Amino acid sequence: MGDASTTTAFELRRSHTLSSLLVDQIEALILSGELDVGTQVNEVALAKQFGVSRGPVREALRFLANDGLVSFVANRGAFVREVDEPDMLEIYDLRAVLTGHACALAAENAQPAALQEAKTLLKAMDRATEAEDAETYYDLNLRFHALLMEMAGSGRLARSYGSLVKESHLFRRVSLKNLTDMSESNAHHEAIIAAIAARDVQTARTRGEAHVIAGKRRFQAALIAEGSQD
Amino acid sequence: MGDASTTTAFELRRSHTLSSLLVDQIEALILSGELDVGTQVNEVALAKQFGVSRGPVREALRFLANDGLVSFVANRGAFVREVDEPDMLEIYDLRAVLTGHACALAAENAQPAALQEAKTLLKAMDRATEAEDAETYYDLNLRFHALLMEMAGSGRLARSYGSLVKESHLFRRVSLKNLTDMSESNAHHEAIIAAIAARDVQTARTRGEAHVIAGKRRFQAALIAEGSQD
DNA sequence: TGAATGAAAACTGTTGACAGTTTAACGTTT
DNA sequence: AAACGTTAAACTGTCAACAGTTTTCATTCA
Image (cartoon, rainbow over all chains, first blue to last red; front, side, top):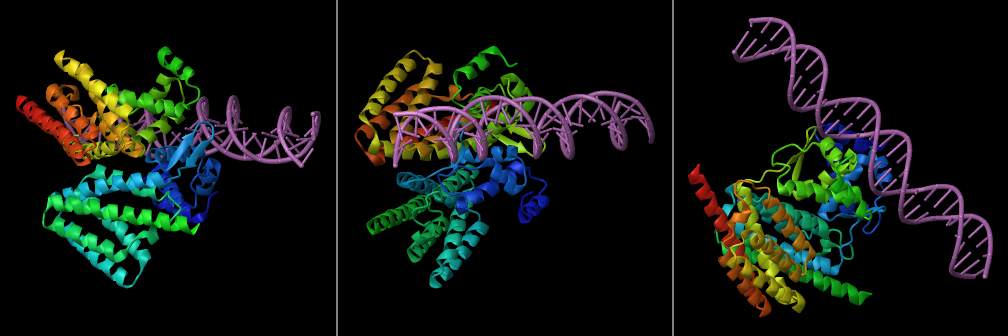
């Protein structure tokens, strides 16, 4: 009946329902790559793995379907969505616009406490850069962007942005972790925070957008580099 | 069981699954106001109404939950989300940014055929304006904005935008249909299409954003007017 | 050898039933 | 008459079983 480590986790959080727990669990499975893109999601296998019946699994999958993480085909079930090159470019553009908007809102609304946390993050990222620790930089970077959304104070914006970030992890041809130019990226971050701290709405928006577009450029460059290797 | 008109509709579309059909049906029920905001969604009642069991109903509700149309509370079920004033302002801002982005993309990508359809729409809206037919203007306006998203050629953008439009219909204090200043609004539309046709990316973006922000202003004005009536 | 065929296995879509929780009603007590 | 506690009804969360479809695979036939 499902392995021990997961079932105990369920015990601890009885406030939530199985479906909502499964949303997180299955999402993690997809984003980590344990459920490979393009493949079919086997409902009975998942249900067995988590020690539940198929009902909650299906409900969770339906939820994830609206995030674009899986897609349903009639009588064939749920498939882990694939994200290709044009999709990624589309996502980058949208992320750029949303990030710009977030920075603009943050320049208007950001609380001092959040700004303080941002500056702490910047320092931590500087240290990661010096230590050439790309792994932790990647995580801190995700946290930084999430913090930007918090500073903007728009839950909807944060949700849309988060959804796009998740979706971009469905692109498996190049690792997103190796894509970051740490020193350049953190220079952008500092410039963004400076504009937000100065309450300069327009500059914050411009820098936020430009930062993501720079990421898009690196992504395109990586694609070309990979393509020439083949 | 369920009433005749809906069950026949189910008969005609056997390719889809019950859950996916129910997504549209329940969504329509919510957006039309038949399921009032804030109220609990009774699963057995819905299931009976459509002549199906609770399983597909729950799956559909889980799907809609991710759109923000309903929210789940453990052991109490699904509730039709309420959208308040600050929510609406947030939505307007996001819609403005997304519309601006769509117009920019449209200026780059729009196909001649789509541009032609847009111009046809503009004329139809002009006629509706002269006839002071706010009802059809409202529908044409929705179609116009959907067309902008199509011209942009970004499915994700269209989906995000559509989700926001749906959500804004959960605000029930003032009717969105009475909010449109038809002549001003259509002047904006024509200016937007002109910029897109001229392939002027920056102007298209600016005008697209400004158009939605104008709607936001009208919304705020309507709120104040309503407030002083109380 | 290889394509066509047909049965069996695997899996999804849907249902009805059961368990546990929440809500409502009702009678009791102060 | 209001507050409290108890009990019944209603509803959600979950499960197991059934029906129908898709896939697999072995067999047959060209």
